[in-house]
Image (cartoon, rainbow, N blue to C red; front, side, top):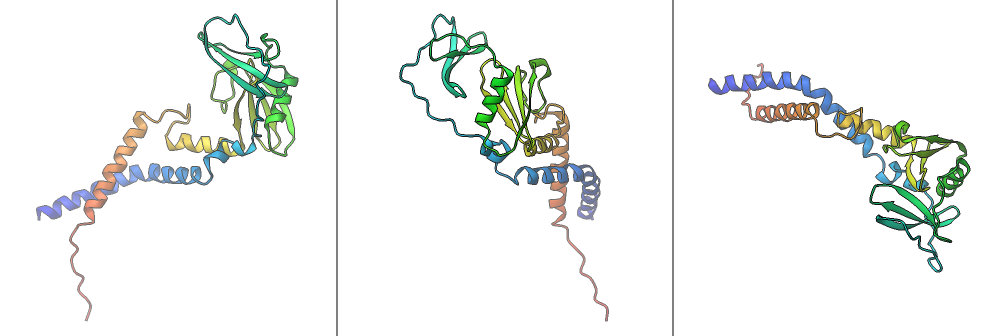
Length: 228
């Protein structure tokens, strides 16, 4: 009798918790299926980026008098290789490999040339727009000064204002994927925080509901009496 009472309680709790956990479980399943539908390389737009040609290092001039340097690397750009220098104060600049001088920030025409050189798709470049760091587009995910090159297929290619580096390639599918990711972790604001109370509470409720469901599988069922 006691066992029957416990199982009845389990069944009742399972039903009520199921109502609470049903929607998030369905949402996690649907969003997970959507995100797994394509390879992550396609989501990131790597198939739309042209490979960077090899850099000829002979005769390159290394800049001097830079101050405290954290990192310095060669990068191929539309007009040839440049030095990308990261200072210890966080500043990033590009320097000429011809004479070692600092190169001015990227202009609109140069941003257009960089975008066309990096984009491997066939769609037309529709516009190039400058965004300051405090107004960075949501799909860039970085508070940096940048140029946005928008193509007819919905692809946004972002170029760093000071270095000319391609920061990100955002396709229409990437934006849909990003929205689904926000739903999946229940954070539509930043879409980065996967450790917060709402997610943990619903995950805990789902686990408990599943536990009760598993326990109910071992319920003894009365044999049905067949009609004569």
